[in-house]
Image (cartoon, rainbow over all chains, first blue to last red; front, side, top):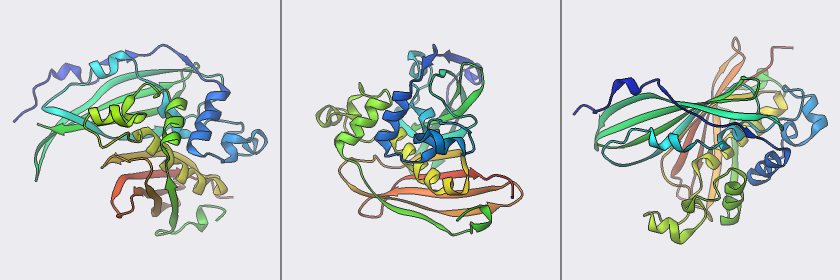
Length: 148
Length: 140
């Protein structure tokens, strides 16, 4: 069975969120919640000797920016239900306190695969996280899957 | 371990015990803009969605896996440059979990190491599996 979707959806940018300001407190709260004690993310002086040269947010902070309401509306749905299968994240630049972050998203790929338990669909949506200098912070591939 | 030269294929990372209380999961949700998502914060509302109770957000699992990697890499000045996670089963709070992994590849030319990391439960089931790439500074 072929998946029924408009191929024009692939690659078309459907979302650019409004900029969100990052505060030092938000980074501290994130560190506390994940038990972060790494000096690159918690100690100004030690961070200066690290590879970023200053205090930055832990890399996985890049996943905390919310997608806008267009995100889920633009993920094609097939079959019944479906679930969050995982993430593939490329970390390019760190987030710093005071940054203004935007997310730009598009559907990267849609395919189906038949395994032992039957036909499954896979949808990957890529969000590019950028800062106010238009530098890429991270590329986040969100993988969704479900039964056809 | 001071540099990539000290890293060998098969080196263990962890294991580290991981116990996520419901309050800690809620603290992550507050810090990550997920406070309004009932399946991560409220048992009863999560059950109405067909889940066994509130579950840990996938991004929190990814953050904990990422932290294991950055804790390992920091003394060697290595940076996490890629992380891929696969969510195999929901991670439930209030369980005695283990976070661990090992080195699968070392590339001295590219100055990178590849890692396999996972979160397992008391029964040894791997709930979240991940691969990561760490980039090291040039040889001194």
